[in-house]
Image 1 (cartoon, chains in turn green, cyan):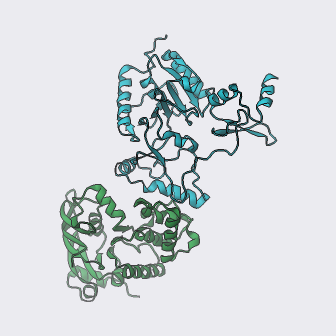
Image 2: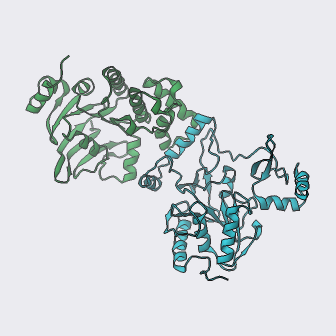
Image 3: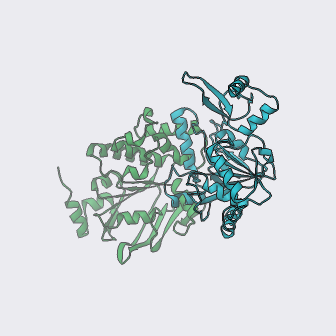
Length: 256
Length: 291
């Protein structure tokens, strides 16, 4: 089986400071990879490099494209990369405001990606938008409301609908549950877990919340100071942490 | 003749503007940056159009200016006077007689021909401006042909109003490539952009952009398959000349709700009345004028 994404020696410096160093891993279709670490450990930098938002100093990101098989997204031309990022890729931001158009109705937000890949039939676009709002538990009568009228949890679900409407194969998530209260978080995680299983999505989830990765991720990568200090199956890493930092991280979780 | 250089601008400036115009003609719909000059009128009064007119004008030209279709409004009169004084060119109000026509917000009803140049005054040349405020990003969107966002605007119109409510500055796609703002002409005029025998030049003074449509360019108005483009106008004949096919202004005539519709193209309306056409209120209007 060809990995969907092969990451080789990704390194990114900010001036003299290291963002992330020498990260390599494979992600297979249908697999969910979690990246955990404290603030400043380089996990968002890594995600940005993978998703084509930051240019790494060195390394390769090979994505298994539908047409031509594995290709290095870093050496792709910009139109190709932007095409990927609105068809096969999706990016869920921590703050829904970064990922939504706040001045455009929910239906327009979901429909944008469809229109960007050439959909020109209003009725079809709207039907798909309503269908997707339903899947993320937003009622159909909110389709013409703007995201500004939505709660934080609804905005985050809308962002997910907007990203998944074109049927991507790889989803990047940056702290998808950050800033939401726990009950809303739980429902969002349920929803995400369902969608990932149902659509056979591969995902890379960056978070500092170990509970999120325990629920969603098959495999886990622990980062500290820009380097990967431990990788393994999620349960294995969380139940039997080997590296000193991972032990600290796991034991720091508050028990209720 | 006055002491101004011909058509006010110095020759180097005109060369610079002509280079931008030629580039615009070579890449239809592409916004060419140019070094817009300070003109003796405020931004928003047609400084872009005036500079383009000045750059294309030759002493043999006959010049016409319209503002919302009318030859006799402040903007039109002052720009016409400006070129009478600084270029000494002949001026006219008849569309068919003019070789250069500067316009604000309308395309003349009389079909244009190959010997004419139509110069538009453009306030905001970027059709994506209100959807994406970053100029760096909109330029990238143009260069990569990412125009999905333009349809989001039309989608929003339909979802809120039941129809595409954009009625002027209706976005068009030029030769299947660049999305262009046709300046704030009513969408009724959009079909006239396409396949026009005259050269069409667009000048935005404050925004420092020139773009152009060479003769017979294919220009399509954006729409949805199930909500096709509709070049609508007031459903009424002209009250003065009876024309059914021209764009109309609604004029409030008194405080009691009285109103009339009249051609916005004053030259077209006058020519029709002189040819003997009359609308329902033509005589009443005549008597008022006589009294």
